[in-house]
Image (cartoon, rainbow, N blue to C red; front, top):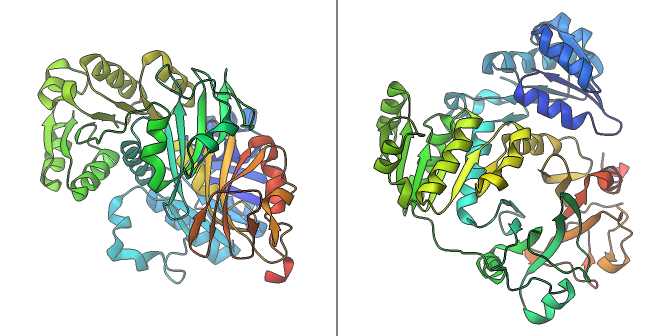
Length: 458
């Protein structure tokens, strides 16, 4: 597969970095900044070209004539849109993805703008919306360090960090089914001493482990409680940062109805705009790191504080400060992956990583088969793939116990005839079923081959 990525900034760089690890993928990266192009050429396994991504001759030199996918992720929405148009009109690039930040373009009233006969964009990446969605999901499971929904929101992948309050410490996983009859939950992977591996039935859990579980949404609360985690409802929320992400989160919380929201924004003009656009949120103009403004916002009594500014260090420091003040939960937006490891020593509850959300959106269009969703864990340690079983695939018509899956791949849940099922050994997989798979990075290429659809479908 030949992929052109336009823009070597934070979003384009992370996409290129991840996709460059893929087998049988050739990446060409375009940016007008020679320094960014040089960095990409020196550190990533990609072709790197200096130039304006929307210029026809630059796209020609990048190999657009035989490219399978173009990802326009420059800092300019308008350049991204024009680049997709040029790639379609002049070079016939079959799939085009664009990063669009301005919410004015994303208003549902203007959906027709991105039709094939107008602006031919197949997929829109809105990192701000992805981050806002991730922040809201953290409120659904406040004790989880990670959560992602699959199968139409009916199954959750949940990451829990085990502490002394966990009553299941030193219990073999194979006993959990007998202890909690009817619980629709499956421990799928364990991270211990920095290494992520597939969970085995004989494994015991220990304090300090980070575990990933697939859980039916209806059993989420009970499951989290069984692992010694609090599940109280979060109602008092403080948001630090009134940019696109902060506003999106505030609007969604207002729509849900039962939250009391305070928003802190440092820039006076932006704070005024936020106050005008929000209905039930109290907007405060001030520095989210200053004690006075944090006390005025009630951060010391907050059920959750979401630090969502565009500065990683501010978000981390804000998380540390509000936890020291007494906030029950602190979540920080962190773009730089090298800073994410600080959350444990800083005692921040969770980090939102825009890179993971963005890369996950892209991977859905790189994987083979009929893919409904992809989620990339950590720094590409593993992937969760939601896929439909198609005619001609090797596992169609077989029970789970007879599947020849790679060692680092496990099924987490199945949707069959509208019902959500956990993967018992005698469960037969049929065409049309939708399965959720957890795969360690080393085995993703093997899984990708298994997901290839029958040639007769194309």
